[in-house]
Each structure stands twice: as structure tokens, then as C-alpha cells.
Length: 450
Image (tube, rainbow, N blue to C red; front, side):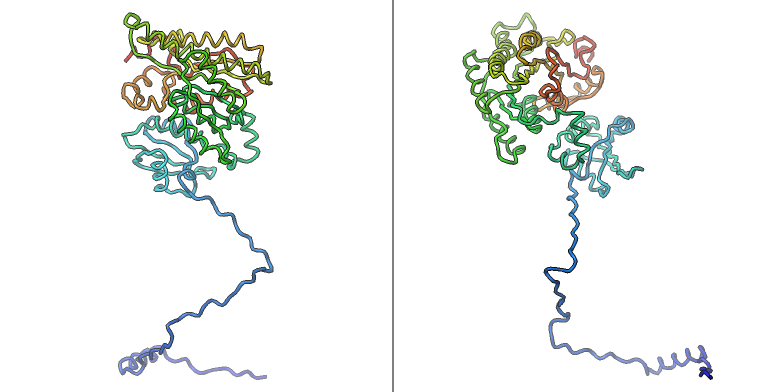
């Protein structure tokens, strides 16, 4: 067999190049391309592929990821030892953030959530795959104060959001460690609910599932509070909060009628929180008038006794399992170790409230009614917001308060209130809980070293 083989020589590359150059110079290969004549205004064929409504193989659709808003970007603040050192030394907050968030998104999220101006943002991917953000604040802001606000905000996120983001195992552990986080259907009557500590406790208890009877003198503010609670925490539009006009300095019959009205709103009262009180004017014992003395005592001691008396009578007669819980909001001014010059009537009335707490705990124990008192220090709230921003108050915190922190009502007080409401505290009665970051431990007048 023979195979044909092409033995022709390849053209010389040099000769080929010379031939091409000659052709270019003579213009033999330069031709104008003829334009295509178009007779239609449409240049693309329409899509002709039609898919069957019932495909042979089912389509699998992935669940869309949640929108990366400012709540999704900032997961939670870090309070480790190294993070606290950053706060103290560099005025820098440390957050765990979403892995998809860049520096600009983190800066915008901090601005939107806390109205804080940031100077610089740095990020770091940790070995466990999470992303850490270092947010340096401008000199106008104190990182420690901002941390208090941030920690409170992340603790306050709605319980249904937490349930959606936690696994069933995590929920089980949380209920075992802090069962008082959920207080579903507990009915709470709270006096002095229109502002300050009372208002914030109402909002927190409503979030935990309680039904709130908000009592105070200013009915317009109570109606606003109850409308807010019902709108935020009642997706089924059932009533979770009701206002009750009540002046605790009134006479016994007026208070009794108001308590009966409160009992009829939800059919019972599980918890009474005596929060209403007044400070009175700052006067020495020699300048204080008898009228002001009686007014302060009427509001701070006689009123809570009368409200407690009429509520506990109804609790006793109802003969319900579990009895009830009474929580009196006292003050560090009523303690032997807390001395506030210029507040004689206030200090005596709050000291009397603590004694009343212990006496009623002894007498009402047989009915299953627990009575405890909370003695708070100076907390950041709607009423004290302006005071907390003053430079001398920062001086008090840094030089006198052992923990050197300024806490907000939520979670500073609300976590303790939840515990005293929950059945976990059924063996706790007759106690005065001091919540002041150790401010009164020295026993000296609080502002004496300024």
C-alpha cells in the first residue's frame, strides 16, 4: 500500500511578508464592506422558549436570605476583657457583625441604631468564622455610656425574634437558666406608671407576656403608654395593657374602689408593684414644713400600704394557688448606709417602706403572698436623662461608685423585677434588694468627695 504525501515546500515567510506589503501599498485588498439593508425596526428575535406548567422534574427554590438591615448587621456587642480595654483606652466599641457587612454598612448601622458618630471602623475575621468590628467613636461620645445603651438594646429585642433565631436546644437551655424571661399571662398592677422607672418596667413586662394595669395620676400619659404596648406586643389585637387613674395619696375608700376596678379588668391581680413616690424639696430638718412632711409620707408610705392592703385582701380571698407577689420600690436613701442630706422626709418614708415590706412578709406568708423591696440607686431613665449627661455626675461614677458604671432601668431593674414575679422566687420574701453598683457601701454621704 502506498500513501500520498504532500512534499510541497512551505512558502518562504519572508517572501510571504513582502507579498502582503506590496498588496497593501497597491490597495488590492482594501475593500469596503457593503452595508446590510434593514427593512424592519426589530433586530432581535423574540424568545420562543415556553416552559411547561407541570415540569417533569420539580423545581427547587432556595429560601431568600433576610434583608441585611442595621439589626442584622450588628449582632451583639462584646464585653470581654480585651473589648473593655478597647472601650476604656481607645473609646472604641467592639461588635460581632454579619460576615457580609463592610465598614460603611457597619458605620451606617451604628449611626442608625444609636445616633452615634464614628471616627473609624476596622474589621477582623476571627478563627471561628465570625466577623468582629472595632468602632472608634468621636471624642463627643463616651464609649462606656454607649455600651450600656447597646447592651440594653440587644437584651431588649422582642422575645418572638429570639425564638425565631434560636434553635430548640438553645431555647431549652435559656428557659432552664432564666425561666423568668417569659411571664405569660401574669397580671401586674403597677403604680407610678406614667414615666421614669414605672414606664420602663411596664414596657419590659409587657414584652415578657404580662398583662399590665398601668396606674398613675396622668391619664393621658397612661393611655399613650397602653396604646404603645398593645400596638407593639399584641399581634392578635387582644388587650395587654389598660390604664387606671389612681392617686396613691388619696383616702382609703378611693384607693379601695380603684383596686376593685383594677381587679375586674382582667379578673385577677398576680403582682402589685408599688412604684409611685415623690422626692419632695431639698430642705434641712429645720426648714422642712409639716405640710410637706405629711405629703411625702402620704405618697411614699401610707399610699403603698393602702394599695397593698386592698390588693392583698383580694388575693387572700381568691385563694389561688401561688398566692401573689408584692414588690415595693424603695430607695438607697432609706438605708442606714445611704445618707442624702436635705431629704429627711424622703429618707424616713423609704426607710419605713422597707420595714413595712418585712412586716407584711411575715403576716402574709400564710396566704402564699411574697413581699419584697427593691432599693435602686440613681438610674438612667426618661426623668434623669439630663442629669446623667452632666460632667459632675460622671465624676461621681468614676470616683465613688465601686463598679464605675451607670446602668439603665432596663435591664438594671427589670431583670430583678421579672425574677421576683416568677415562681422561681417562691421561697423569697421579706428582702430588700440594693441595686446601686455599690455606691452606698462606703456609708459616707454620696456627694461628699466631689
